[in-house]
Image 1 (cartoon, rainbow, N blue to C red):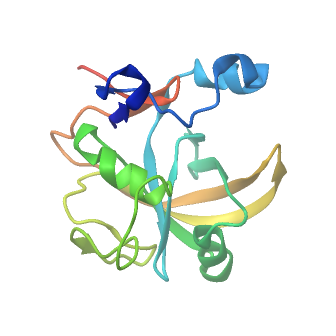
Image 2 (image 1 turned 30 degrees about the vertical axis):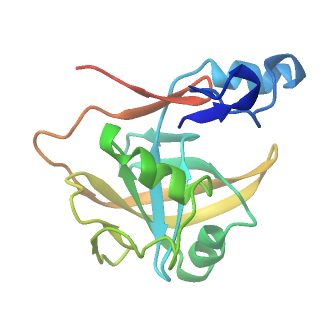
Amino acid sequence: MFHVNPDAGGHIHSTDPFATPDQDKSPVRRLRGRLAAPVTLWTAPGPAGLTVSSMLVADGDPGRVLGLVDEESDFWDAVSRSGRFAITPLGPRDQQLADRFAGLMPAPGGLFANGDWTETGHGPVPAGATTWAGCRLDGERPYGWALLVEATVEHVVIGDGDPAPLMHYRGRYRNFDR
């Protein structure tokens, strides 16, 4: 994202003029920002969706997922009603999609108005997605300023030739080269 800085003679720069300066952020937030995190899209029947980067997949029988979500989001309302959701890892070409579902970009007509979607029993997934997981909600509890969501992985689709993952690091998207 680029912004015009009138104080710099109208030059374009890549920093967010509304971002909280580092010295004003909590030390915990600054620590979290220094840990690279995958950018994923969580969607639920309704449809509803949310960009999530605070998540973990645990292998096992069954596999499990943990994630931190906004308890006031439309996504959480939809999951708490349906008891299921889909997780799609995003790639470098999905930055605008990630921003739209994070509420950082306008979504005229709604979050799902742009792009093609494939309906699944767990929620819609982007039509071009080759890898995604369908999850069943097991529980939730307040955790920090978020809601810790615990789920069982019920369905996994793994594609060949997936793009490198989109990562979030120090407040920006980063591309992870293979």
